Amino acid sequence: MKIEKNQAQANGRDIGISTKQSIEICNFIKKKETSKAKSLLEGVIKLKTAVPYNRFKRDIPHRKGMASGRYPSKAAQEFLRLVNLAESNAKEKGLDSEKLFIRYAIANKGASSRHAGRFRGLKRKRTHISIILEEKQKRSEKKAEKPKGTEAKKIDLGKLKIKEKKND
Image 1 (cartoon, rainbow, N blue to C red):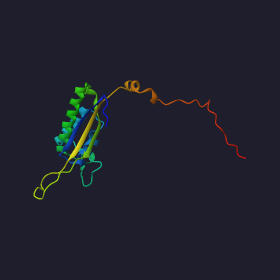
Image 2: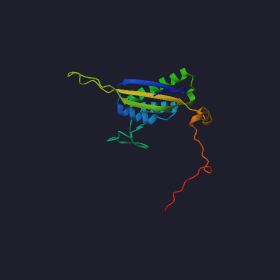
Image 3: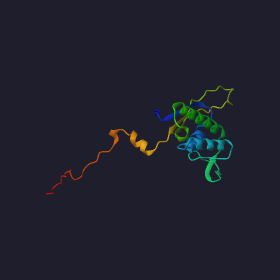
Image 4: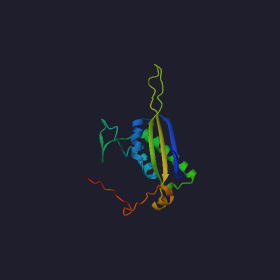
């Protein structure tokens, strides 16, 4: 994915957390401001805020104020670390930290580790996480940045001649 000048990115490779939990956390924090996302993740770590499970919700009990949900605190700690890292990358680029929001939060399955017969107790969870932050812009700034060729052409219907078929 190409990063634009008003975006900042942080990646985590082969993190030892569940991919399913990571997907649910991505859906939970996506399109939120970074300050709001950090406070939500801190609430998950302290077991105060539950992450709603929408996709992988089989045999998961209901939580207060929502449907099914859980408290994946270890995964939330990794996400909090990555959001802080992406925010510091944005500051290095010169972006305003007050206007940042999470544009993309993507979790993918990582490489599976091999194990021998006597080492079955090792955890083999591996997840790749990519977080992209973007700076909010005013609507007038967005219109000014549009290239000229992207505007739709207006057609005058009075000048068009419509041919009619004659039925014989």
